[in-house]
Amino acid sequence: MKAIEYLVRDRLSSLGLDAIAELTHFACTSEDINSASYALTVKRAVEEVWLPALDTVIAKLRELAAEHADAPMLSRTHGQPATPSTMGKEIAVFAWRLERVRGQIAASDYLAKFSGATGTWSAHLAADPDADWPTIAREYIERLGLGFNLLTTQIESHDWQVELYDRVRHAGGILHNLATDIWTYISLGYFAQIPVAGATGSSTMPHKINPIRFENAEANLEISGALLASLGQTLVTSRLQRDLTDSTTQRNIGVAFGHSLLALDNLRRGLNAISLSRDVLLADLDVNWEVLAEAIQTVIRAEVVAGRSSISDPYALLKELTRGHRVGAEDLAAFVEGLEIGDAAKQRLLALTPATYTGIAEQLAK
Image (cartoon, rainbow, N blue to C red):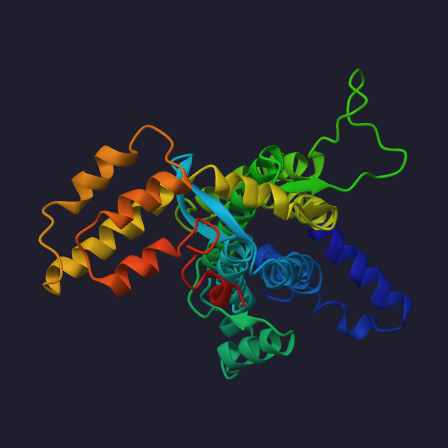
């Protein structure tokens, strides 16, 4: 910081401004300069670079959610066949989650101090006791487009940074979840990858198109998340009025955001290179009719409450029929035909298929 002060003094002298050269770094400590510099740098990085990159991914997710809103798919809870959804609704969940965290990040504070060696304006008052130094400092910092931290030690306390990096890490966790889910859908054949001319999938297996964009995104998000977590853990603490652990740590802010940007770019490129295989989704649903067991036992319960059935423990009844083995369309139809339930409920169940048992998933996606 002292070297920069001398540089500024020399520049002022070269401009014929020697008379004010002595005001360079007047009553300041290095953190008065650094806190504003870091706040401006990070603010511009987030608002002008990182958020636009995130917005590109969110926009693509919204597009895919709308496009595939009506594409029924077998859900998997605990990795096992479960109540169907639509691909659009599952993708919309990620857009919804990311938009919420994005709003928190966009509303972040970026704070700086300008109050001298230990945050008391002591030197300022010694030089000019009549000046309203806190107001002067606040007006200066706010003119930079930053928030003013009135009450500090020698350093600005970095709490705004901890809050921001935790939120960016949170967004990274959601993006990591997106990458692993899309990777899994690709492995299930739900998504086909669009071949890129000249690309090689494997050094020995020419047929392969590896989901490298999503794998690269995973790795970069893990590195970014680890760095952001370390920043948050370190920056929240400073021994007494100051120590220099923050100085070393903050030099990795750009590295953390850099890995996050690489991940966002890989996700954007990966999402633009996949095509939904609706036939695979339908085939998967067609061999998992047992997922309708939930609907059947729930309808029976409603019929019992309405006085149209006397079946006891419908859950156990369906568990015996379906748990641990496949049940086909004909088996379920015969089972439903033999149920003691009202005719309207029976016809509703007979008309149901795994592909139509998606609730309001399509509307949710849209």
